[in-house]
Length: 285
Image 1 (cartoon, helix red, strand yellow):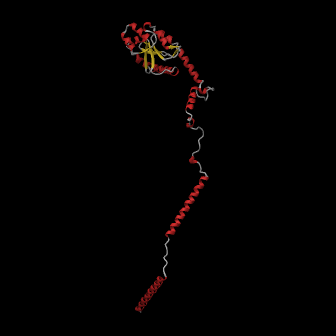
Image 2 (image 1 turned 30 degrees about the horizontal axis):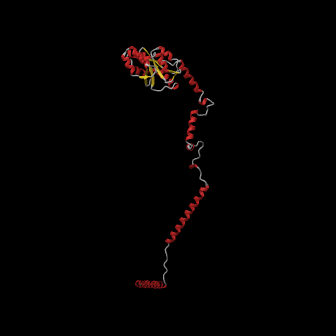
Image 3 (image 1 turned 60 degrees about the horizontal axis):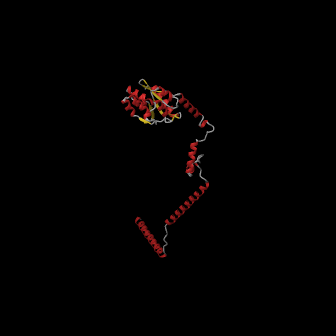
């Protein structure tokens, strides 16, 4: 597939994805003609659908379309059709309807593609009929190339209407400005009723207080601290004075008898010193 065509198909599937809620894997309804034509051309139908839709696919076929393949008596095409998932159309096999009626009854439910089917058909009448139903991507084979039809008028109209509605909802709608959707408000109300203490767990909004480390301390807090420091200083002074008094040397008081003996010793020492001095003077003379 060429890059330009692949890019257009990707954009087209994004429209179906956002506006019509298509999800992967895409359910692809195939008719009897595309099964027989791809088998004749030795074309892998499932891989071709995956390349065209650029996603995983789930091929499906109705009982009426299989009955139409049985009438061709092509056993290989019948075996290929049996590998696809069977989609119930509530039409009995003995009273099988034409593929056009069968596919229209399965796809168009009250004029809407309720089950979000992608239709792969080689019958131009089927494609023209289902083109009137909005939100139906259609695929067909052009020679040996699988092609996706562009958006139909009904699908394009609905997608444009939805895009216009988005412009008038939300912030652009004054009646809904600042108000949550009805479903969300109901859900929040039910949660608040079941959880009465939930408001206490919520964070308080508004201006926050200043940083406690940057606040200047109050004077009332400083006064007791000063008294504590003064008390510590006084206790230290008392302890230092007590240690100094305990370290003072105590004087020993001598008795009168000991004093007399000391005086006698001192006079005896002085006399001996004088005798030695006189003897030295005589020898010198």
